[in-house]
Length: 264
Image (tube, rainbow, N blue to C red; front, side, top):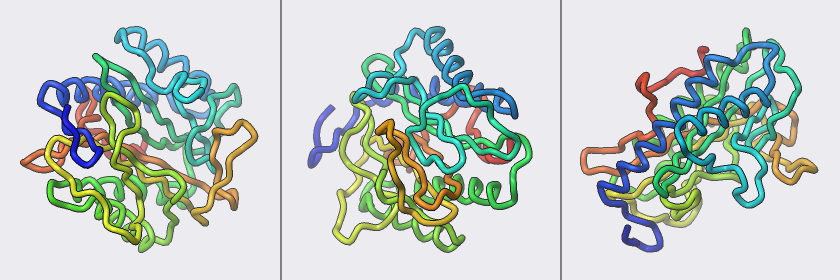
């Protein structure tokens, strides 16, 4: 890897390792989607992820990272990100966001999806739809020569036009040999110019969208972020390589690109 203004440029071998790491993550998220239904617990999601990591012979990237105790982040309803898996059964109408990472050959895969638990409200379904669609709107701006903040501007415009809020406290990031590398990838448009994207960069784009206010609070566990007004939040994430032919989504499962997860 070589650096460009602090951001790492990956070669073909390194992008290949990132592609494999993200494929494993996407396969795990597919399996999570298969099991999500009323009555299961997020602890069961955690157990599934751990077993699949063991089967792949890889380490969960989140577990132990900055002291985080679990392999997955499972955030239910008003929880935005970093929710702890628990033994509370999911109820009909809940939504659950699952963020997951693995380490493979020294490189990190990172992706997230939000799932409907049984039949959900029209508001919840629309929130998930807009959040997932905003992710692809942002990915379309992940091109060499663009300011990285153009991604956030596109996400923010799409989300706010739909009447939802964009979380400011947490952002996307570069990803590679470390979970969080430069550049930061906000889901909104900061006032100052950002880093110019170059071929070989790999970034995690992850809109976190709220039904109401974009303000969040952190619970007593010092990890779980919740919406300040207690309304719903959704989260989708892909790891994306900046390539001469355009953005390449790395977090694609063996089933192919799993869009419209919110319909599950």
